[in-house]
Amino acid sequence: MLALALGAGCALSAAFVAPTWSYVALANYVWMVALLARVERQGAVLLSPWMVVLGSTMLALVGIEHGFPMFELALGGTPGFWSNALNIYTAVFLIAFVPVFRMIAGADRHRSGPLTMLYERFADATTLLVLAAIAVIALAMIRRGLISGFPLIEGSDRFAFRRFAADKVTLYALNFKFALAFAMGVVTFCLPTRPFLRATTIVAFTLLMALYFLFGDKFFTQIVAIMGFVAPALYTRRRAGSAARTPAVLAIAAVALASVSAVTWYIYSDGGRQTPAATIERLGGRIVGQGELWYLQARIGAPLLAWDNQLVDNTVAALAVKNVDLFAVEKSIGPSYFSNRYAPDYLRASLHRNAGRVTYTAALAPVGLAAFGWIGLAVLMAICGAIMALVSAYLAYAIRSKSVLSALFSAYVFTLVMGGLGQAAPWNFMSLFALKWLAVIALVELVLALVGRSQVR
Image (tube, rainbow, N blue to C red; front, side):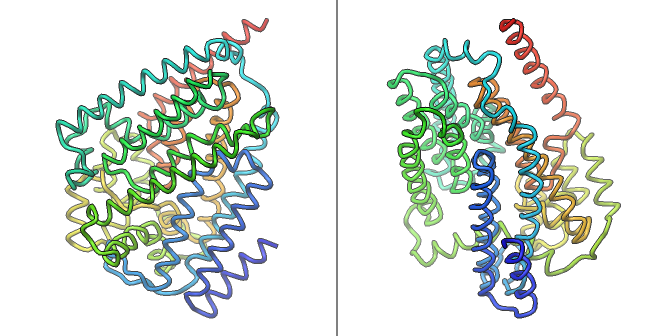
């Protein structure tokens, strides 16, 4: 039934062009998410950050098909089949995700890890250690903010702060907030920690989120972090005693969502100095950025099947390049494929000055369409769905094992893969330099597993 709705939406929006069809696409996307949650609830919980990003792209396309301007491309939106076509590829992604996730995580999703009993025995000590680490990170971030100025208070650009002013602790804390949030979620909702320590961890996470705001972080990045924090609770909620926690978890998420929305409005209103109309215009301009590349490439079109030798060869070559951000700009790969061709002159110059540290977003489907054509993109999305299933299964293992170290490792890998796939930048997790660290993580996990099995024997 859903397949019929997706096909009909795509065909009708192409034959009878009207912005109204974008609402059909949005409704079908919500239907897909609901169906995913029904057929694979735990997988859906772990994939939720990715689905939020895809949802933001769908919202962007609704605006674009209603004529919202795309300042980053100097274009105005037009109605078409853009949003309904993207739904087809999202469905392909999910069709690949579900069976791979079930195959890897399904058999063991209720089995604890080899060292789980040890982690449970030292739950309070582990929680105190995590809280101490978060306190050190927060103090380092506050110190850096006091020295260099908090972007939210100063009204400065958050990317410029990260490039020129942030120290390594602050930079890693900002870039890997999902990993910190997920580890704190495992401590809070998986380990048998004392209620006081659990409440303290929730307060610590709340304060950390507030601190992120001071560094200019906005809606979607904060939402992803919140999802990382509550994911362990939602993943385990069918277990004994966990269902009672669901209302509390949902309440935390609702309050966090309201806070994130309020601060995002404050940021885009220039601290309340802009009128509501001007603020909405700025927000709209930012939101459509999530879908502008797909709109552009889908409108340009592509063959049914293609192979862009130059784009593919340069992408593969990037896997062995250390200064890959600059290389991507020079070779027009990833988001730079579009910025070098279609960005207005002033924006292209700015992106070049930032040497790839600031780019367009949501580039996977557009780059895939340009490189491989309409059919080739379907193959690419299936591969990406399988990859996301692998890293989601690693998150599931961390939750089952109740290991803070595995939580940090798995969320770190998830962040790399999600960012790399979302930006059509596979070097994020497949370069020689990324594989080195992934090998270290695999070795540590293997040693822990072997130690745990030896203890069981």
